[in-house]
Amino acid sequence: MFAVDIVTNAPKTGDAANITIYESLDDGAVTALTDTSASELEATNAVGLYTVDLTQAETNAAKIVFSGKSSTSNVRIVPATVYTVPANFTNTSIDSNGRVDVIKVAGTTQTAGDLFGQGSTTSTNVNTVSTNLNTTSTNVNTTSTNVNTVSTNLNAASTVVNTINTNVGTVSTNLNTTSTNVNTVSTNLNTIHGKVNTINTNVIATPGLVWEELLANHTNTGTTGKQLGDLTTASPSAATIANTVWETLLSAHTNSGTYGLVVNTINTGVTNTPGLVWEVALASHTNVGTAGKKLGDITAANTTAIASAVWDAVITEIADDDDLRSSIGKMLRGVFERLFNKVTQTVTHQKMYKDDGSTLAVDMGVSDDGTTQTKGQSA
Image (cartoon, rainbow, N blue to C red; front, side, top):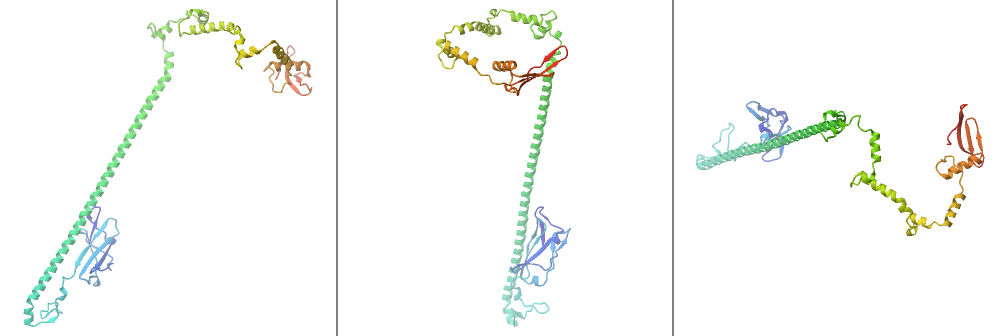
């Protein structure tokens, strides 16, 4: 039996222990041989050829088809067909010594005349045997052709596998190229980052360089450097410059868009505003909710009512957390309580109580150093 590796397309050597051989007698069922231990014919000069021992029962057929398999991956066993006898061979009479019995033909004893008469039949039978042998040779050639076809198909499969390997290699190369490009982009980004940092550093350093620059280096007329350089200790002081600015007549500044014109316009408007406000007739303002309408509605009668409401308003007691300076009403209430409510005086505290005479309203600290007596601010 012939074993071949379908990946390398080469005969497979050293695989005897992994091979199992099967047979089919006269196109019958496929069964495993009794001998399960194949032997490699020769690993050097007969690579991939394996033999097994056969029993008489395993060869008792006119046609024997041998097949096999290997437990080794990618190893295939090439099948073989063997014809043990040519067609009609069993019709030949053979004596106990293995010689052709010319007395019997087809098992029947013949006379000399019968033999002569059967000459043509014998010749026909010989021709039949020759034909059968030729058929056997043809079958052997067909088997050889099939083996070659299998080998060709294996070669084609190997080519496909090699093409796949080549494509995988191409993909791997493209991936490596992509990785290189990514690394290049990363390097460029790092370079840009470094340059940005350099620019940032230069920007931070620029103010210091500007203010530390020697003014004597700048002599071009009309430049800021020259102007600053010309300022000496004899130049006008800040106070003089300020006075000059504020004492300049606004009427002298009439150029559109200048700060002087804006301030001059505001000044004119402010000067004229009081006269315009107080001289406007209140009767001309009738929109409810406006200051003009509200002032127009005030008469001598409601003025008296307003005054009465103000002076008759009840001012509530001061709460513990009240700020006495927050309103006129609270200020007046504080003065009232200070004059008319209960007040206690100790060495360190002056306390003012509410109307009930027991609830503390204000606690003010006092001190006396022998020269000056001090009363603290109310809390």
